[in-house]
Image (cartoon, rainbow, N blue to C red; front, side, top):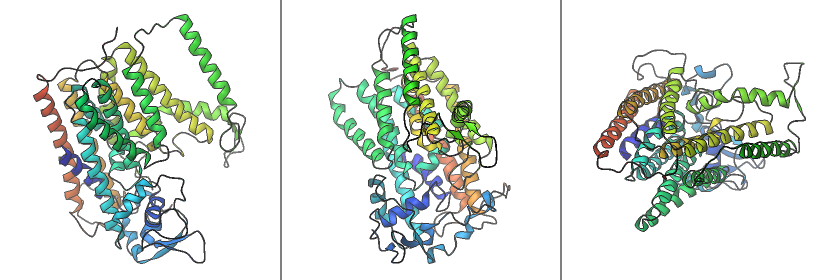
Length: 492
């Protein structure tokens, strides 16, 4: 299974050019130069003597997406314009100066060499291999609920999370770490009486924590929230009585929270509800309350962006609606079944977690006076969403039906296949080419090494399909011999 997952992620790794992920120039320059601002951490980064604190790096590091991100080109330009960038040197100040964790760039720096493309590709393959091994390891726990959780994980990560895991973006480690953290945490809590599992599970848990906090600044907060949701799920109150008193308490708590939030100064010392957000092109301003209502109504579309409705990477790679609709439908089918077949207390916990995620999304957009779907990338919140659906899957009382799993496998496989092909097409010829002919024909860009574009697409498609087939076969084979679930037995 690890090999098939690695081949899938490797296809995603090779399917896009250097600079395809969000802020990749910032991440690459940080890897090449470090965060000191005075000396470069590699021989291929030197301080600019005339412009402190700028650093001089290869053009493909400093501005990898610059040429095909031109406004006039949009999504229609291929990555052919990158030719020659590695031979140029640019001065840039787009690198981290200590605000981000250094574990990820320090590890990636070991792969830096003179050839930028080879360096980036090695980093992507390393991230893919790391994710494939760890995720396969944690999902190999012989427990029906864990194996079923892998099914919903396969659905929810297609295509957006797969795209990031197989990239050089530091979110790769965040997705891997948070996934492993949730699965291992629930396995530890449900098998806490089996002492022989403590050591290996705790070791894997520490690796998951390190990956998450070493990659993104918000990683530690994601772990705290996921840990809280996991504990609430595993140790819920035995009796949940929805009385008038409890409703009044909850209502009072919400009112108090709103009052506190209204008075909460954001980092710019502005009260986010007492401002007018003026759109430059319009004379008529709208208030922060108007923005909040608009963002609330736009939340469903933001959740669809977890499946690629807003595109992938930067400049944005627009995906065919079939891709994200199939992926969203596959996830919804499994998630709705899991929630419907859970104890009432777990259903309430799921809706609470989902509502909390909505509040978090609204909070950050409101604090910066941003419109939903306009500024803040969904990748910041997606690890929480993946964790919530994994917890929901772990809490169901019955296994997924075979026909449901097969239907989800077909939807997810189609979504992955079309997404990889569109990604490769975007960088090989540009998205103005709608040909279904071989990706090898008429290509304007490709790596100077490795298999051909059509081979990469076929590998990613077949590996992902084979992984689904193997999961279904293994699940059916062990269904009779494995106990159903070890979910807490609470009063319904």
